[in-house]
Length: 368
Image 1 (cartoon, helix red, strand yellow):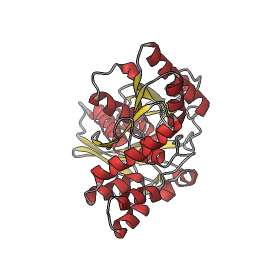
Image 2 (cartoon, helix red, strand yellow):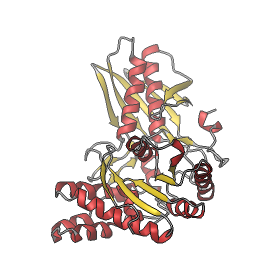
Image 3 (cartoon, one colour):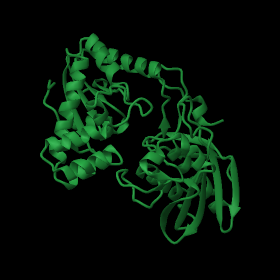
Image 4 (cartoon, helix red, strand yellow):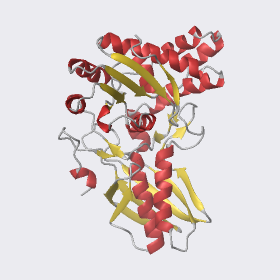
């Protein structure tokens, strides 16, 4: 049984699962172990990107030429994820040094900018890449092999991808290998909002009236580093349930909230979407183009932002044009206005952080 099968979401009664990135790291480590030891493993343990251990059954193992192939099954828990049940396959061959990671059949190829990935390369995000490489190197340590070529594949990946937004983003030929923590948390609006409300209640019972709302693990880590003076209970991962969190905070007498988010979520909030799950809202690129034009950029730049592939792509254009700082602050002001309109009693500051944790811009406290 997969470790995911007994992993429960806090206060929700829902099973969490594992990301495609975690599954790829598990399959790759299993294939590397098969290569080194000569025996196919039946189960493989890895360390997830968030530092937690996890164990995966190996559902397939075979020799492929001089290399070895292993597969694990993606278990998304109770999240309605189209990749649930997919095989994530890794082929591992010996190489001179280091770990080279490739995309195989069923893994998308990047065809447009704005995703933080090389155009023409496989859609394997940076955190899963590091996790795959670390797990393979751990298996090679002490063996005769100094490096490996790893090819990640997903049987039926192109078919599965029809149920995702990959085509719209210029990811062609399969699914993406994703995940910043390794864990998939089930999207249940009622359950998630209940857990967020509980976190706010705990903070208030501890006497805190100034909270920091973050939209995920990375933004929370950035916010905590920037605010070492705050107690841990002051930080609440609200995920996509921003509107519900603001309402509950106001009802419980919270005085001030800092909302810390990355460009995609902040753009959605600025556009008035306070439930930011991908199934509920999309980034309004016309709004980002309007912000660009209001800052004095010419029509060419405005049109380029309007046609951007993603909010991240729009940010890259702002950086190129020297507009990033002013545009980020303007976007934060718009987001703060939307939040205060939703919960007028709150003093609210919106803060936009970049993908490396740098603060790109913020609104003034209480703005809106």
